Amino acid sequence: MYEILAKEELAPVTKLFVINAPEVARKAKAGQFVILRVREAGERIPLTIADYDREAGTITIVSQEVGKSTKELACMEPGDRLASFTGPLGIPSEIEYYGTVLLVGGGVGIAPIYPIARALRKVGNYVISIIGARNQSLLFWEDRMRQVSDELIVCTDDGSYGRKALVTEPMKELLASVRTINHIWAIGPAIMMKFCALTGKPFNVPMTVSLNSIMVDGTGMCGACRVEVGGQTRFACVHGPEFDGYQVDWDLLMSRQRQYLAEEKLALERFEHECTCRKQDARG
Image (tube, rainbow, N blue to C red; front, side, top):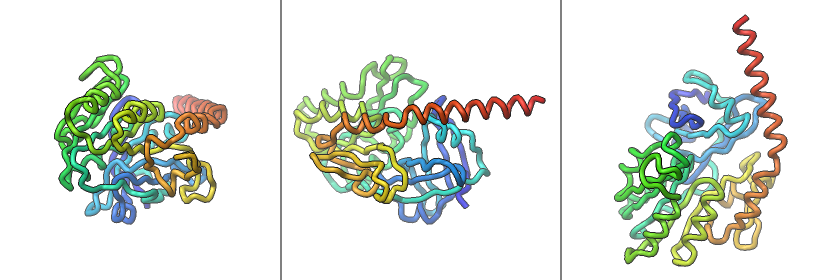
């Protein structure tokens, strides 16, 4: 049922997929996510919704190849079908009129920040966006972000495109200026969101982050995605994925993200070995 309708390479390790999922598209909102499986016995992969089209019945997802399952997904082509595609899951972003909002997207986090920026601007907010990546080859959707932003700042760590800076540098400059920022969203790698929180906290501007903790079932039953927010245990799948960035225990989150590194490395090595063998067999 969940046919891949289109595929696009956004960066060397980042792929976009448009999925036929009318029931998911009908209810999807900015900030929510889906959990998919490439094959019946495959791992369940949580991905934040990057875009949706209710009329066409499609969901757009963006995946970065970091392990066996995401590399397996990257091998799929238009016409292929996913084994499952569950969603929309999680609590949607709180879209309302704040005034001037600042959205910070880092790396693959640019994808989920896009529908939030679009929704915030639609209700009348003045949207300032900062997007960044390690280098120009990993940067994507500048055109889309420009369309939904009143101001856009583009950064690369190495200076290969836009401003040579981490996203926290222009963020701090904006917060320290005479301009009033009423709310901040920051989405990207956990380490980036942690430093966005450290940057924003002295200015006392509310900040929302989207947590990419490990998930299994996505319904709060397994407890794999538990995080500590404000000293309390929360489940990212049902209480989030968005939380107050200043209340998240970032060190605990990053520690939990590393707990299956050995197993993930082994699974990837096996997958790559199988791919190599298949290619050799195909060559005869």
